[in-house]
Length: 409
Image 1: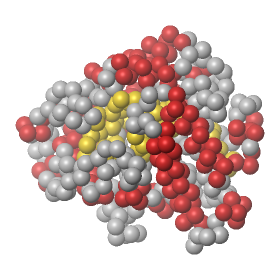
Image 2: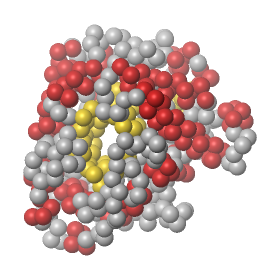
Image 3: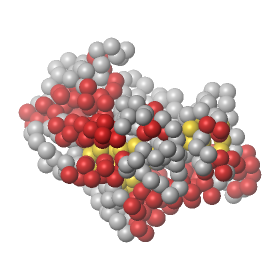
């Protein structure tokens, strides 16, 4: 962050290598298999809907702790060095928050105390294993349903129903309300103040992904606060810009070396929409559809790192990995923002629809390709249960080809 960022690297972009797309690209060349001393190797550990952990709600404390420790042990075995732990999945918390109820994914009942502190345990156990622990927050999602009555009786959304917008079968806080923005920042910063986390991490959900035939009903907020903007879209983008910029400023005020990062959908804009965009044909563009100007956040230095979710294979016509990685490398060049690439480990499966994902060498080729760009400082894999299962052996191939030894971030 300009005036905020603590770390970063800048270097000129290198050209892509065509051999990576050819038939002989099954294994990394010897030079690519040399150990790298410094890079981030991470995994996302999702708790929403019990995706990764705990395996189901209502398990006893000892079982939940054993499962979580096993996931951290597996990260070490795979020579990873960072875990992005989802601690605020649906406007609730995996720590004793002063602002929001306990997450339902622990006990099965939102607001019920599980009798222990998962975030405190996770930070302690991760650091004991020399793993970074980034606290992963979803700023605006409130519920994966539209019934306020199903929320915990003391949930802020029930005390402030005017903050809520139902959309696409879910409930969201309205990003256009200044009091909402302040509240979600307060709720997230509670964890930063209380735990020695290494990062604050946002995923790709800002304004929700578009749902055909539905409108996000923020008319009253726009009328109250949007008069100075040329369009509602500009106003919405400013709302998310403020979330990001203010969050970084408030983190610095806490005076701790905690990094702020975002893992957006990888297409900022298609070049057909904006010549500064990527040569892609994606149906969603973060700038236009999620009102997240991710390129600006990098160029302005409002964040410390970015992890675009480049969840497509090399050679994929609509959104080619070989197009998006260099585009992001050019975007971070000359800034102090670190670039890591989000990898779709979950797609690597014998039953995958796309042929590329049925090849256990595809992800290894991704790492080989990305390492040709010095701006790329590592990779993050989605998600933890796939790091454990690795049904195709794709991550094992990455470890064999590229992770010859531990690496420091």
